[in-house]
Image (cartoon, rainbow, N blue to C red; front, side):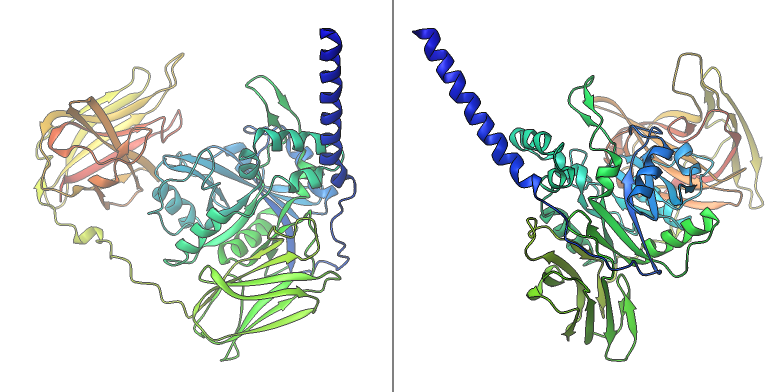
Amino acid sequence: MKRRKVKRVLKYTLIVILILLIITIWPSLFYKAEKNDNPMPAYYKKGVYHLHSVFSDGTGDLRKITGAASSRNLDFVILTDHGRPNIPCVKATAYYDHVLLIGGSEFSLNCGHLAAAGFSIPGYIFPPEPQEAINDVIADKGVCFISHPYDRIAWTDWDVKDFTGIEVLSAASCAGKLSIFQFLAFLARYPFNHNYALLKTLHYPEKNIAKWNEINRRGKYYGIYALDAHAKLPVTKKIRFHFPSYKAMFEILTVYVKVDEEFSQEAGHAESSIILSLKKGHFFNVIEAIAPANGFEASFTGEDGNIIEMGDSSDAEAGVIKITLPFTFATDILVKRNGGLYKKIPGNTKKEVNLEVNQPGVYYIEVYVAKNSFKKLPWILTNPFFLNVKYPGEPQNLEEDEIELKKLLVDRKNFFKAEPNSSSEGTLSYDVGKADELITKLKFHLQKEPGKEDFWSCLAHRENFDFSGFAGMVFEAKSNERLRFWVELRTTGSEGEKWYSHSFLCGREWKRIHIPFDRFHLVYGLREKPEISKINSIFFTINNGIAYPGTEGALELKSIGLY
């Protein structure tokens, strides 16, 4: 009797599971993207951004990735393998299968991840400090976007500036927030319709877009749709599925970039064309699995007659936003101003919409497919038009020559000692400058020790100091080539000894550098001001955190002190 009862319960349980499976899978059998047969205008290039290959933690090689991109008629892919930088990835920029592969890197920084492209490989490792990494990429005419700002690895330093923008929608981030039941539903749907399964993992990125609106109140920043594709689904440390595939992911989120000229057959020149447009914000984002957006266009014509593209600024605050929508299906159009709703046009079937605006602000457009199963997802998201936007003046940073040296620290030849690891070299010498300044010189050659990762060469001074009353360190530096070095401070307190550092960049000409104490960070950790009344040592260091084995040269320092 008891066994019969168990069988009955098991039978009904299996029936319920089967019914739930059918309910879950059934809609995926009938879902199709909306049809759009419009040709892609020659001045637009369609591609995907943020993916990983075998150069880091992805599963595909370059041919597999570009082959998948070619099958989806993409013009470019932006590869962002992990590293600061990932050298093989950056060197991979080339045409494969008629697809332009742009090699970049995703930097792991003290405050999160930053994806960058369009830079040349420096002779040093990019620093872990976010602002310094941003500065290096932008100075080299590259672009950098803050990755998955509210993911498991969230971005924490919103004081940074001058980056290109943020990922406003990340496929991987959305997937990472699925409940166990949503995850199981995804697994059930994927074999039947991967587009439907992947679309069901997406949601409106409310928090990301709110942050995007917030940072656009203090500067011009662009939003981008990111795949963060790895072509794998880790279940445990040892078990992983090799899906969603690159091809499936390339059907989900795309970026349409408006270029100034047709692609050159030379990959480096074509890369520069894409990077320049990204830098200007001349692109819009599309959830491709809802529908291709070929033919969509948006521009602003000011009352002065001047026309600007998405991402551009206009001195006019009145004019017309022109939206071109040559589609056979109805759309819901939301025009946002400073993050709030400015105008909603539901059920639009017009091929062209002209919207008059008469207020200054940051305007962008969200387009939804009105009768699609995913009508609540932002099918198209443009970058903003910045109309007569006056940003409040930022506090002026002190110029290096305006920093007043209040206390000279190094006033004798025996202040520092050279301390390399056993396989590296570090030689200390001194010179006198034209103004009788003492010049301290560290000649170095870095080398790994067998079986050890760390290597270094440094100038070290161990003495207790109280730097209370001072804002930071100031000094002049130059090197035989463009390299980064550390200033390191160690403190003694109730928690024991703590190590702090901040990097600086110098080259062949003397450069005056100042580093506020509140910009220091724990070594390989978060930003934290040292307890400056309890300094026990000072170092100027080059090591494996910022340089490669075999790096050699000389660092020269003078006028080292406090301001």
